[in-house]
Image 1 (cartoon, rainbow, N blue to C red):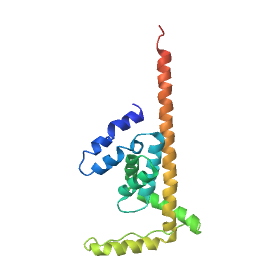
Image 2 (image 1 turned 30 degrees about the vertical axis):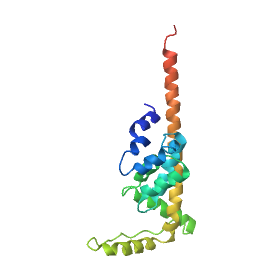
Image 3 (image 1 turned 45 degrees about the horizontal axis):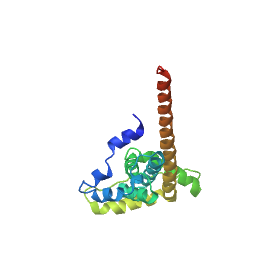
Image 4 (image 1 turned 90 degrees about the vertical axis):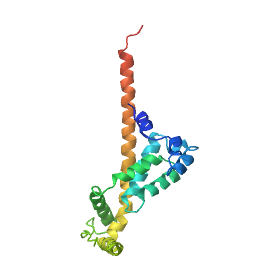
Amino acid sequence: MPATRFARRILPSPERLSQIQGLRWLGQYLQPRPWLWVAHRRRVAWGVAIGLAVGVIPLPLQMVLAAICALAFRCNVAAAVAATWLTNPFTMLPIWGLALWLGGLVVGDGGAGAAPAVLALDWSAPATWWPALSAWVLAMGPAWLVGMPLAALVLGAAAYLTVYLLWWGVIRLERWRRLRERAARPRS
């Protein structure tokens, strides 16, 4: 099954979104702008790149920010929102390692970066979470603060190229398969 048919099957239409209580506004916004929801190779690749770049930076409401950025850059909103899910507790350690390395290269400590200490939160006192998190981020230093946007750019660009080239390969493979089927049919 080609990728576009699969995407059309799993993505709700803007008409369907406008019937869902919490997403009514999105369906009404997308209806006159089909390019934001259609599974097109460049728009999906751009959406994945934006979603991953936004997802790398540890922010609250990453999916909302990815959707807003997708609307601003006129790319696939669903791909941008879904790409934020690629950053999770299991992938953050390598992403932050890449950020520390890139930041260290730019800041000038040879890519060593600051090794972050373990984040210790007192789970019984939520009022202490923000000061502990702030102290932890500041302890990582400028290498991490410079490296996070750089890691977002690098991973976003890599995601764009990966999605675009994979989609292109699927299209080529599908065309090749159809040509072989046509050639194998007996002519009458």
